[in-house]
Structure formats: structure tokens, C-alpha cells
Length: 129
Length: 129
Image 1 (cartoon, chains in turn yellow, purple):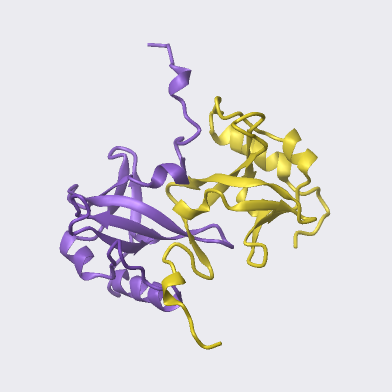
Image 2: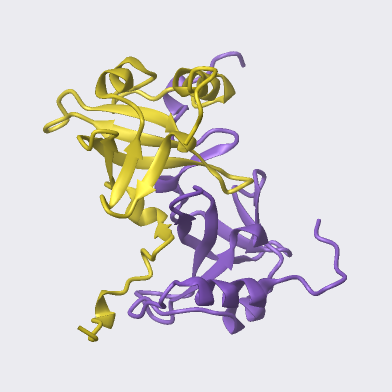
């Protein structure tokens, strides 16, 4: 088929770029392909423009049991085929890590960031793919 | 005063980080301090997590005359004192650059990105501060 519906080409997403406003709700999967949750938002370094943390929303039906889990950006990779992010983190590791409830908010300072980085740091000796 | 209202400390913004969901609407000023517009959204590289372009919304009252202007991230710097971004771009340079209307959408591919980068590239011989 040579026809391309140009109406479907959006400025909100291209092959390599995605609009911040479209990030919210993007699905996150574990390595086995199970859905862990969705992206709530990104924490962006105001000066460098680098996304530092991705806050993943898990659980919750009508807000029950919903939790937010910040992960280092480097723990996620985008997979076109899945249309979402994949993390090498199992569900129980996610639930055991730093998290907060919708009605609370951590002080997202350097110490909190270091806690996140430390928790998700690959064990020494492993090779990052 | 030693009292700190901890309720005002939000996870959506800290000294160096800002939530993507809070970026929309952040004000953008020119070097002289005049307000150029507000941030509509960011275009983020899905793989690296680097913010590639910042789309600035200018003009518009009830949608009249509103235009979106993508700028390279490197053209912006965040100023705490102003609570917003400052660009070394005058209003007429912004209006003469790549832009689109709310009812249209460019194909945000590499060629379009190169056009933006080229337009806002500092002249050779200047020193970037």
C-alpha cells in the first residue's frame, strides 16, 4: 500500500521524539512483558534538560492502592514494538523500592534521588546491555 | 522564622528538578525580561531521555493568532529568580522562525529538527555563555 494517511502524523510523537504531554499514561512493562503500570510523569533537570526520573504509577482502582514509583531514566528503555517502556525490574522489586502515595509527596532532593539511584543500581560485576 | 510548612513542599518541583506535568505553562522571557510566551510542551528523545525541543506558545486570545515555536533545548536557560526560562532570542526572530498553528502539525522528523537547529544556531565566532 502506498497511501499514507497524513492526518495520522502528529507533532506529538515521531520515530524518536515524544511530547512531554503525551508521556503521561505510556505503559511500562517488566522484562517478561507483563504490564507494571503507566508513566505518571517525568522529573526533568531544569538546567540540563535531561530526564532524571520517571515516576511510574501502579495499582489503583478509583485510587485504591495506587502508588508512585520513581525510577532512574537509565533503568528504562523504549520499545517501539510494545509502544511503551521496558524495565529490568520485577514487580516485587518495584513495590519494595522508594515509593509514595498520591496523597503524600517526598521531598525530591539530592538525598531522595541518591536513594533511588542506589536502589536500582545494577550489582557490581553485571554488564549493562 | 523557623517554621516550614511542609505541606507546600511538592514532589512536582524541587531546586533542580521539575515534573513534566508542571512544565506546561512555564513562562518564557527574552533577554530583556519581556515575556515571549509559555511552554506548551517538550519534545523528548524517547531513548536518551534528553529534551530535544521546547515548544513555546505565543500570542493567542481565545486561540486567535496563537502559534507554536519549537526551540532547541540549548537555547533556553532556567532562571530561578524569574521562575521561568530565558532565551537569547528576540520576539521578531521567534516569529520569523519555524512555527506552526494549533490546527496544523509539522512532521517532526530529523529534517524538521535540523531546520530548527540551523535557524537558532549562534553565528560562527560567537562565544556561548
